[in-house]
Length: 389
Image (cartoon, rainbow, N blue to C red):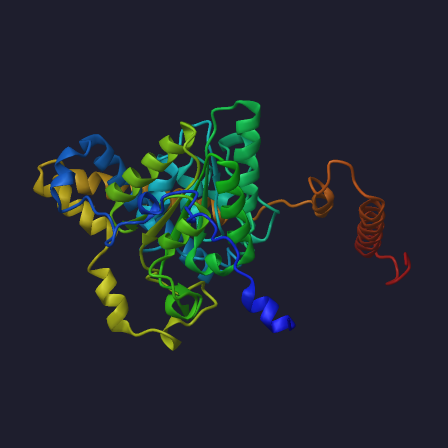
């Protein structure tokens, strides 16, 4: 019998029917983004929560505008505005308990401030003054992450460690649609699902990764559908509906805290302003597109709901706006003060125990600064130029 004949005669026993480990149906997101405002679900929303969300949104919009102005004045090196995305920013901060952790990306300064971090300290990194600018442990807010998606594995690690220690802690990690194209996104979701870590992933799908539209990043039906491949639920929500985002994130946080594992939430929103002050958004999108999204503004959506239900009047609107102006004035005044910086701080808080290279670099800088100070003293006393070199 030939080899081919032997192969043709081989009839293996059919394997048993394959069964998926998990039924994928409950993990699939809704076909349409979940909404609250303008629907019957809004009638069940807590009026006090809606008022709080509204005040935070108005303050957030004014904060974005003031930070953008400070960039134009040279007081900030760069500012990635979250104008138009304030509902995601505020809801993410309010959905967490005090003991929980927030892991923001570089565009999530407003979420950091909404979590309780001082507005000036939140902008210190973008000013170029410090590595972070605030103590992450004080408000349980990780440093603003400029590299895309690198904060996601950190969030999973913290959440997994908390679970192992028996701490009742949830981590909420924020990322943009561009960050979902990074390997860190895959690694974080895979580990989180395998370990059933108490972590919530919030993807703010604002339409563009700088100038790259979502259609050129992925062919998935939605980013929320990616959750199924990792074995976790995916939720799709209107990212400009503050009440809906808060509800979805709060449900995901409760689920994680109860041991239900991670959730991936995709919030459909829009970046109204440019990627940063260094970007010309008119090169890759038209004004008509932006104006369409302006008509779905998160502040106007919530203000309409509140006024129609008699929960907000003109005096209330004016009071909130006055408070926002006071916040902006304080931020402007404090940011216009030149900070006193010590160059030696560059070497602090890098390693718990400085490496030999770091100690060598520190001593080199110390010697250079001492020589510069000596030269300035000599110049002031009238010594010949270069006499102290």
